[in-house]
Image (tube, rainbow, N blue to C red):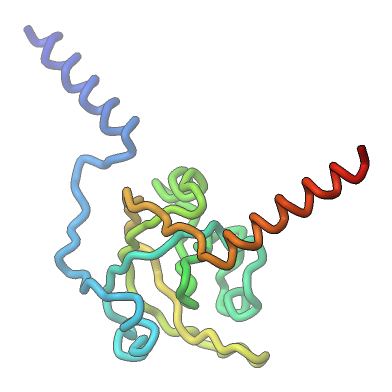
Length: 172
């Protein structure tokens, strides 16, 4: 009887590890849900506050901006997620569960991120000023579909196809 209970506990633990879920669930209560269009305008109001927002994950930043490096956030120790259409770097240490899960997230997927808005100690002296970043606490991949391409992109693609057909026909 004891061996069956122990076996059941081991199997349950392995299922939790395989699914990437820890035994305790993430508490979303302290995080204020913020719309992206509001966050763009009122980012200063959320300094040092816990927020959550949904956005399109478009991959990892491969070249860290100089302002991140000056603040001690190098690509050796941190991941920087590129979220669209927001100019707010989402940064997380390459440790624990994040070390394995972040690289596995597919590009162009909607995600919901939870974290604390932090201010940089130093400002970027060139052109664009990045003054805040989000220190990631939790990320959830959503089941939303990416919106279809704009009409201009569809027309350009169609024009390209027709042009390629004409070129092929001329070669014959």
